[in-house]
Image 1 (cartoon, rainbow, N blue to C red):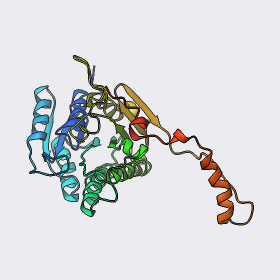
Image 2: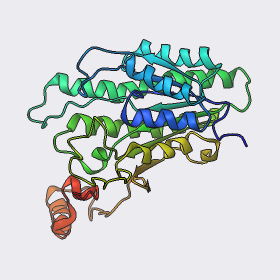
Image 3: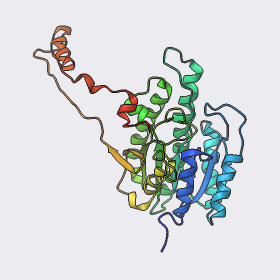
Image 4: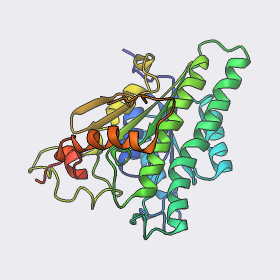
Length: 313
């Protein structure tokens, strides 16, 4: 019996550790040939010397299990590096079929304390990095389609976060980048559907180097139990979204963790007010909106941990 991703090739960015590593291993287990990208810096804030070792170790692990994989050292926030990454996948495997964007850094600070560089660096790696690889993958798929190739296959899986959904007081840069990634995903889904490409985003919860302090003390596994925040809970959804089975899933946002997948609806209107005159005045808006917000339950705004449904273990 053939594997779901047999004959397909994939890129996974930020795949040297954590979520990206689990996703690369899962795609390979499902039959895909994988380009394992990572910049290999030891600091989760993007600090330290770049190293090929993390990506090479994951690629070697895939090959040792009988799969096909190559490593790529590079910072996807650099436009030309992203071009070279897509070119490598095409040169090694003949084409690119799946792009999983996962690379990111953290530089947390309250908005009143954040420096311009702390803002720019996180936006650059997360949001620009997702755009860069998406751009060159999209060019590849569009060119193949315009050349007359039938049955072009393309899958994009982007990584957003519940920091965008629920807010995260000390992460204005990260939350903004993750919100932007959702916008990039839905726009790409509409633009690329005609070429046989889908684009979806996930909001994963996982205990990794990036989140070790955020999830410290939450849902700690017992001896011999699988960590409910293990990246291994997230990787199968990425494998599914990369597969032919998900051909009808496009422009979607899904939350995933610990044996749970939640499909997130687009924002809905919760209340609507029309002016009694030709145009609103301050006084009329005050008479309509102030009572509306005053009547909402006091507990409607929760602390981030409560919104995420996390419990200390």
